Length: 235
Image (tube, rainbow, N blue to C red; front, top):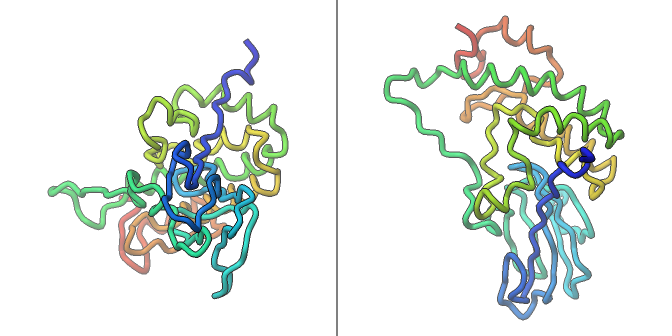
């Protein structure tokens, strides 16, 4: 079987007034087929206008900018005609952020497990950037990681938009199905890789999130704890 047959399709979510859409917005200002979201990762989406009459907008430097296609974050504000939403608003069955419950016995500043998972994020980043222009390499990579990573296209069997629950321990490998797709341009793929890397390669304490920038993981690990929030990374 051709390896390309094993690449899951990227999930797209149609939005509009027509009841056949995945998300139905019963408002006269919304076109029958207004826009669609393409799921790139649990946090990143491409919003695309479908030729709507009143347009699709995002906020840019304090003003609204009409867009045809744009990579956005799950918390970004989107205007469909004159109706304001965040992506999280449009996906009411999906929580915008994961609600992690700390074990009563666990030190609230112990983030050693979460920090260890960031090594894979750091290691995946240059590999994915280097190979994102080569779809065949991404397909071969998917053949290796596909058995252990939940693909974006698995939504059909994971329940309604269940793909957004992909675990962070997968590093950036969860992006492979998206990067192997022909539906995103090379520029959009590079933007997605950079965005996910910047969003995840930072202090794992949700109350801090201090960025590690381009610092090598080994050097960050030698620091052992965050100088800002005192979260413990390495014991």
